[in-house]
Length: 340
Image (tube, rainbow, N blue to C red; front, side, top):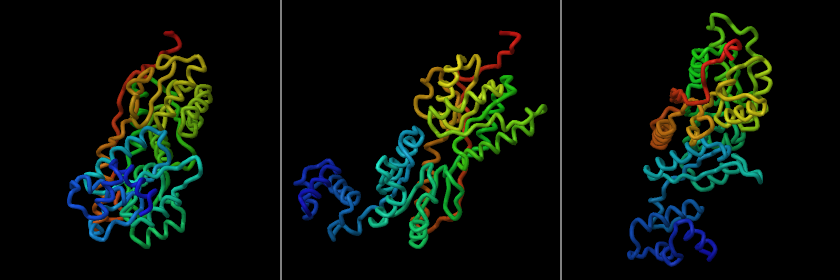
């Protein structure tokens, strides 16, 4: 092993280069826990273990994440990493980067390292590309999609019931007296957003007095605060007194957009988010949002992955979770014009 590679393994394992050398030589003077750290570092760095340890190689599990700026992705990643480690599996985080590293690029690298499985978090199996997808199918790589962005077939999935989550938020706002409720969704074609839109349509069809052409109360935007702020004015102009957003980032952007219009939240406009990302309880005002059961969903992902690794899972398995509407200070009863 070159000096550079030796240093790389030592830094990753948090031990000295001398300790790495002793492990490579099979020295009995190295503690078992330290030896495991070094062997895991070899796996992550793509370096073949010494012959005596090859049967002990832990499976690498790739976690494919669109970005880490979205707090819910970070929350799922943290939960999955902890659970995978408890099973003796090695999580390898792969996220799109500004220099253009894509899912396909990471998958090619992982397959070269005898990958044990893949988890797509808020991404899509389709993003792997046709060539990589075919290679994964041919090798029967265990895979689980967590809240996938697109429709996918023949792959195990864990997701929330987006339509029900939207209906719960809408019913909450309707109970507060809001009759014209807007919805800010992700980009057109984003499947979880389409499911929320279906929930919006169902809600509107059940109302005693339908709001006419309710589609004018729907806006699409990128999953960013600026996306929410930019989408809001059109909904307010249409007469919306409340909005349901497809993410907490969009909801915080809607709050910002409302303030730009001189509106107060929740007195003039009620806002509901989605995810219950960290710190939503500390925003101004604290955000009413649909909470995803992150830990329970992560457990389901790892369980499905483990079953596939052991050859006992159904590749078409779908595990669905309900969200919990957490009511905070960003929603309030509608104030009628005559009472202002």
